[in-house]
Image (cartoon, rainbow, N blue to C red; front, side):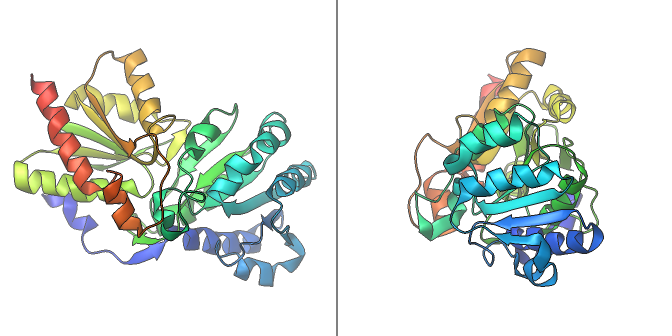
Length: 324
């Protein structure tokens, strides 16, 4: 299909590198940008910023709760703090500080979380955060963003700097296909239709966007199924219009995310459909209420049924259900 040509062979790049490169650009552009890190400067590609703008870089150490409090305080002076660490430590370990010091007071703090989901890989269950989207989206006033590749992470980092209010920006560890437009305009709260189709709507986020594209291509080539693929990079606020317009056309939907199916993107989509349309067949590709384990990223996606093959199988199932 002609639509797939622009998503052909792609270079592999790390989403966290897109974040680090954007931070350096922002440091040059905006003197109000301040960066805080919890002893993970290299892992979050913050080294360049720390060298060039040492007076605006604060190494807090392994004291994430303190980092959130400091970030909230810095924001009072008109600065724009970017607080970075691994997703598990950026949410679970500091939820009280985020709720009380940042969200309740609506502080302009950007919480930037790397190494999210199963694709963190070998570090195992203690570090693989699969609950963070649910935790963050429940906080009043919190914007939740989950990017899919280097280019989108770079663009999102620039965009959240201009956004006033708390943001949770989620990205990953491994090198993944870098397939979105280098010069894209990132709009918070606006989904992106990547492929136009009529048989099923596939709504995905983060690393599962590329898996959805690959799955939809095979579904078309092998079974003649035309998927409409939507990249939901902003989980809160959710782009209701792009979802509803697509689902009204296809009459069935599949959501795909590297997250527990409790509290994730799928539940947000189900709520919108239930309240605005009614009963529509939906399938959830997500981690089935369990912790992860140590392993290679792609092997873990396969084992926990959150890869392209799981999307293919679930898509075929939900279309059959629609046709009954």
